[in-house]
Image 1 (tube, helix red, strand yellow):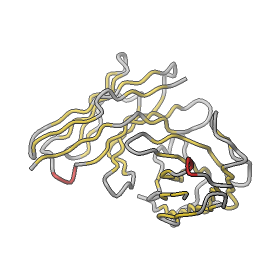
Image 2 (spheres, rainbow over the protein chains, first blue to last red; image 1 turned 60 degrees about the vertical axis):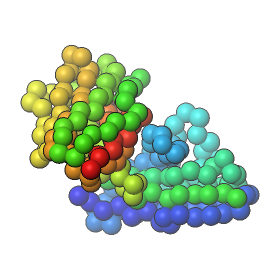
Image 3 (cartoon, chains in turn cyan, orange; image 1 turned 120 degrees about the vertical axis):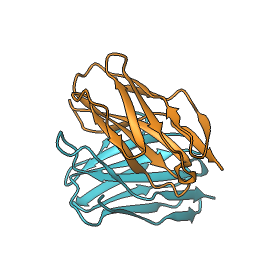
Image 4 (cartoon, each protein chain N blue to C red; image 1 turned 135 degrees about the vertical axis):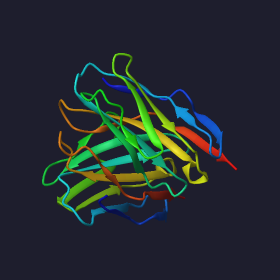
Length: 117
Length: 115
C-alpha cells in the first residue's frame, strides 16, 4: 500500500504554545487528507477533512480556530494546535486518500502523540 | 447519519483458534463500503479487509474473512488460525458513497491472542 508519513511521532509542549504536525503522502498524490484524534483505548474521532487548495471541513464540535489545517499541496497537510492546553493532549492520526467509488482505501500515518504540560 | 457499533470491547482467543468480531452499522444508503482495520501496539492503522455492499460474496483475505449480512446491517470479521501477531485493536469502518467520502469508525475491539 501507499506510504503516509506523519511527523513528529511524539511531541511535548508547554501550555499556551502552538504545535504543528505534518502529514505527507510519500508515493502518491492525495486529493483528500483526514485528521483524527484518538483518546486512550478509544476510537478514531474525525476532526476535519481537507482537500488540496481549499478550506478544511471541520466536524461538529471541533474548534477550527484551535486546530488549524492547511493542505497546501497534494502531498502535504499540516495540523497546528494553537495555544495548546493539557486537555489537547492526545494521539493525532492523519490519513491520505483519493477516495471515490474506484479508490476506497485510505492510508494512515503512524500518528503523533501530543503531550501538553 | 451513519453509525457503526462494535459491541465487544475486548476479546481473547487461544493461538491457532478461530475468533469472530462483531460489527453492526446503520445507514439509509444502498451502496457503500465496509472495512476492518487493525491497529497494533505500534498504533499504525492497517487495512485488513474490505467489502463492497453491492457484492453478495463475502470478502476473504488469507486467514481473514467476513460475514456480510446486508439486510441485517451486520459485518463480522472471522480470524482463523489466530497468531500472536494478530493481537491488536480492530476497528470496523463504514464509507458511504453519497456526499463526502469519509470513514466512520466503530469503537473498536481489543483482541488478545494467547500463547
